[in-house]
Image (cartoon, rainbow, N blue to C red; front, side):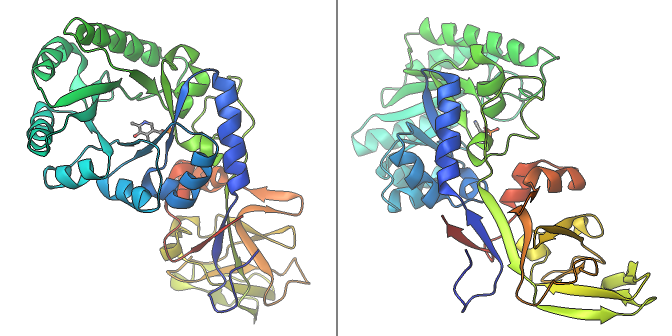
Length: 376
Ligand SMILES: *Cc1c(COP(=O)(O)O)cnc(C)c1O
């Protein structure tokens, strides 16, 4: 599968069947609980509209996005399911966001008041989800202010609290007990809301590692990001049972040209690599602007004809050089796999992440808009 011949041959294949498989597998694993597909950041680089369409067809209950802009993109693509804006609405966006049936996460009383005022003006009651900070230290009302927060929100006539949520800081860490502590704080805070007459339809806590590894946190809804895209390897705890997950993104290109490099000659910026023997070096039209990070210079391998070839020299903005001396048949036009499988071998986003001292999410999010997405 390749882009048409008019395009630069560097592309990301998005396997929507694997997306659907992962979704159904995690859903089955988690049991009877509503499921939000987190499709923020262009579905972790996989394409928010296409992924959301497939997941909506498979019956997902909610979508989660980071921004109002991302929510509008989905509405404009005729996504019908409720959309939660995890980062809330910016003051100037409230009117538009309500008109697009987006639901905000609210973390401050100022936000709640602003939404209340505009909802009153529109003659409606706005649905909100209230976020509680139980230990993440980022968004949300402090858990130990929950009673006063609930008392204040209960006085607003034009907002209705449909959800109460929190976010785990370390659900991949089984040993610390921090997820249990956050859950206990959340349950206490929920009781404080109830005693102020607020009984939300959804209590939700769990992200991917929460949903898989901490069954007691599944509550009314799980919010799944990484696992939908098959990115479990580095964010799920190693020691727990988990559903089978399949990668959704592959990144491929083609050999643009092959050059003979004599022993002792350098390749690329700063001459960090010098041929030890007479070598065949292939140039691939992918670089750090595409998201093939410079930190992978002299570190990553790619797959050609099912075999591994090392990146040599510096990855530059638009080009990468690889040593194909050990693949004598390698030829101009051969498909090159940066992420994905070829023959018996496979390179995962998690593998590149490990070399970059990051997580797979950053790798797939980083595949830039210059790389065309091709949907299977
Ligand atoms: C991103 C996000 C998620 C999804 O996290 P994953 O680890 O990818 O499952 C869930 N909840 C909130 C609030 C988020 O911001």
